[in-house]
Length: 605
Image (tube, rainbow, N blue to C red; front, side):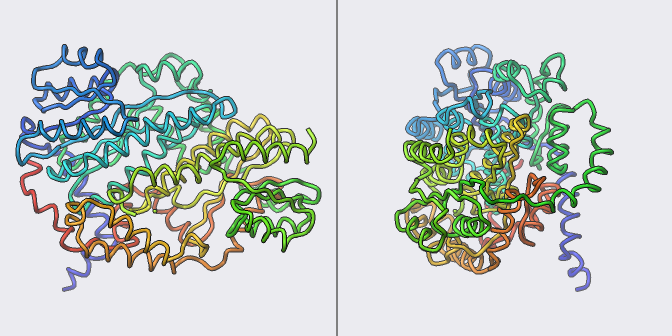
């Protein structure tokens, strides 16, 4: 009995899980000749090279290419065993068609052993230069395309208790200047992959993330012309020509009995990941001073810790200063607007509804100006910008959530924030002002059942980091607010329950049967508990939002709440320990699903 209690001790279980993962990673999966692997983006680059390598290993490769020429080029370099399909990831109907073709290609009773999401594009340019349409176009391929392909093929992967391998990048960990559009999508891939891995563990599905540095591919060649200065200095000669190292990582993720959750390839990638764990002010400094890494690690922290309290406590006089706040109908936005109004600031508040606008005016001073604005409507944003310019003078499990819900979350939480920021940036630069972006601790850690929300908040983190580093030379300071769970309208248990049941009712019957009513009950009960667990101290978030607007030297990040600090600490652990600690967060999967990996006892042979 005592021994059993020791094994249940969380720290001991964490260490045992970590050691088991390390040992199992050395063992190889058997019977590769009977495995089927689907790879996207095989016209050239990593996708093409991976398809060729896996074909040589005897695996049945199912490769998608964007063009006919790409298909023909791949076929000429591989055996007759390899099958190709033409696929544009942004075309939902094509994704469905390829699914049906792949399903008919697989032998009876055989599932898909691996899915490698490789396809991707990028455009390199400063935030102010890049139209919002370009941001969305890159997300359509790198993020939404990846999610739709994964959701579509997940039933076949479950059947084989297989693997999902998602291509991210070192820029999915560290957002550098002039790569905001690309980093947003790769941060999103990280969030989606982490949530997917945690949700799929009852089925024994392993999810790995590939994080290459700069390599000689068509995309890297485009990056090199306008790449961020820090990366350019680190790679004074060229991007690495050793693309085989990336292919090796993909092969390992598909053939090891226990794959790694992340594969960082290249010294630049490892350096970027190391820097991503440092305090943000050091990461910002190292972005432009890679050569002085050792000095930065010793001198800058000492200077900062000695001086930070003196500078941060010096408050600016807000009287006569204009502050624009979006989303002021209720919640944090409304509370911040009223607090700044009391402090004498000239508040410019946007509300989604006329009722919200009138309600805010009724309790604020005459100095406050309110505007009706939907952040997803470009014309309304431009109209509000024109009026302001005149004033100034010159959530659910991944398989349940439809793609439309992912994109709706991004429209409000991400694209709306980006468009508002880009529109008003000239006025902020003119005043050498401040930008405060409300993210969440869900922009740092991606638990199960939150993927649409976490993807949008990971995107906010990437955009804010990239923007801050670009705006440094204009003396514009950018801060990110990362609150934990706080009791606002978004945590309405009744609304969440109705939404989850609606998602459930829209699932195909076979998916409902696979999850079972017990799983639905566990998820609903978990969200109801979560809706009551938030902090009632909304004022703490309001005070924190005001802090970067009034502090002489604002911080780049503000964590709020004990749950936020706890999850931040969890994010610093190895992924195998993170997964163990987050396994039962929100809800516990029913025992019937926890034993799902016994359904296919020979899957790893």
